[in-house]
Length: 238
Image 1 (cartoon, rainbow, N blue to C red):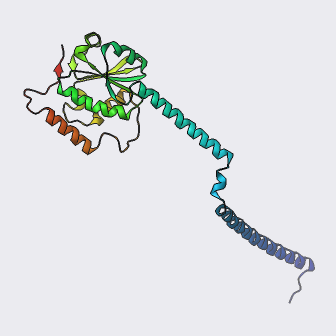
Image 2 (cartoon, rainbow, N blue to C red; image 1 turned 90 degrees about the vertical axis):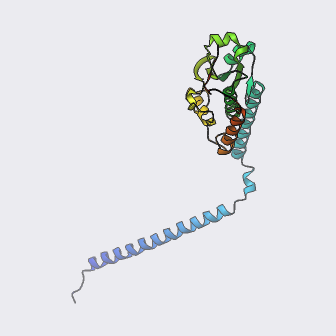
Image 3 (cartoon, helix red, strand yellow; image 1 turned 120 degrees about the horizontal axis):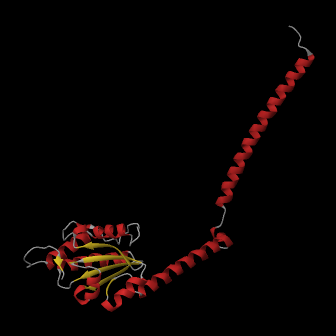
């Protein structure tokens, strides 16, 4: 057998030893990382939740959340004192002040004897509860001749939409609701959303577009129109 040069043999042995050392180091590193991960999991498992209650950052977040809730509650109470959350009938003498002071306002010009006005009242009453930031009012057209003429209200029911005291949109009769008496509340809602007088929000269980509530409105309409004769067209108001 041919003998290997001493220098080559030495170099080869050195390389082999280096490779084994690197492999051992890699195994040690892998084991160390696994132990650290296991230890970290154990430490997380050992954390006492009660200790978090004393964390100053958590206390700060909790205080900020309470302050925000308190502020929202105070705002809601202030709006409620102004008549928000319901469809409120107002007098002609109060109309101008209410409309100019409310950022967003919906006013229904109505006649007490018109059945279609009662249908609009049902839908607006539901939406008033849903969109608390918007003021919903109703004004008897025969009892408010000045504003009826000034705002050119000629057909009832008539919904006028105001933003910062400016009339930006209107819905005359049932033209925007399919010319049917049993339209859903969502039809009026879509009109108000398009006008920008109510803000988009997620639906909840209290929303008024359920089948049961629509059937209740349909039944109420049927009862109120029993015995009526003639067409069911919107009523001209002179």
